[in-house]
Length: 254
Length: 297
Image (cartoon, rainbow over all chains, first blue to last red; front, side, top):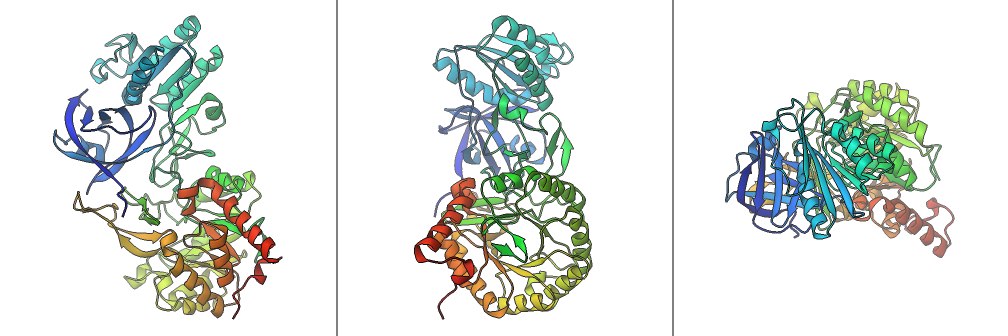
């Protein structure tokens, strides 16, 4: 009988902010930047999580509900059950790229930064958060920071500083993960500059492998056709930047 | 081929529960080659469903305990109307409720979306009768069919559960009450899977309906027994992955075949793989119509 889950043991817990923790596990998960896993805490529940690193396998988890709250109580030596990886991944292209991360959207970007560095691609990161206290640790590459309240870096949305940078530096591709309205701004900026972009979308997910339909956005399944979509695909999604669905399937504003 | 006067481009049908939440995902299945698509079962009020994990698979087994999540019939009508604008492929609207009266109410409401067929998901609890589902009892199933048929004009299919002693008797009761067709079968069980490292059941709901190729022999026997008891079209389903699997169901008495778990292993290509496989078998053996391929008895 085949196993459904792989069991990882936590080697290190890093408190990133008061509501975000990174969990470093005791092994490698063969995966690509942008892919996700379904992380299960037996007896509690299961949630989709972006992979923040393949080796050592790392997840960066925001405490934003019942299940992730219980995950935050996990300590070094505790176990987490994982199925996946699922979904597609960011395609690295060109010599110079820009990464845009809002909040815990930085998680898959950390993995992408590692891969870009391996390939000698020049990488610049724009990261945003509500406040200085909500900022995750800065990545090991040139980074521009913005906070909604101006307590660190630029005041305002991270996309505020992006447009001028993109016009000046003309990167080969822009990659983004974060709140959907932020990504809608990234899309528009890239469209105006004529630069391709790849966006990692989030929707309520149930199965993770493309059959339940819970994560459908127009004619795309976020778990199977995504979570990473090119600007061409995103432009065909009427719901992008506007509507998501809750667990019942009801359309709700993003 | 035709199902109660509804013209299907081929005999494959997307099973209710798979990819049927949104207009976009139903249309995606239609584009991929489904002969008809069944929407996810909806009820009068919205339901969030069970805690995850809710869908798991291993070997040739699928287990789900989604918990009939749906946004309610009102939202579903809007979604199905949108589907009708997007696709010509026939639409089967699946509904469920906790009483015969509510079945009729949700069927009346869903008919505003003008589905080609209404499918009654009878594998849901009968509130007034405690521990049974409608599909467990010929009387309860017939009462639902009777109520719904007196209120709606489109063909009504009763979807039956394999978890009964005499499925032919249930099918006959439904047809006698006016059902225009039978869908068989819903999931087997429920079943259970335990993670021995965790010492916990895997599904959030502990138990879940079992489907996939593992249940095909049981589904096939159910379709065979139903076909001998009633004279209405049957949509046969249960672990169909290939054209040959589908031909088995057709020989047992099915007019159309459901595609569900095959999507896990073969993706959306499953519709064409199965319908092309049926065509090829018919060509190679000189059959020109589905109805010619019944068992020799």
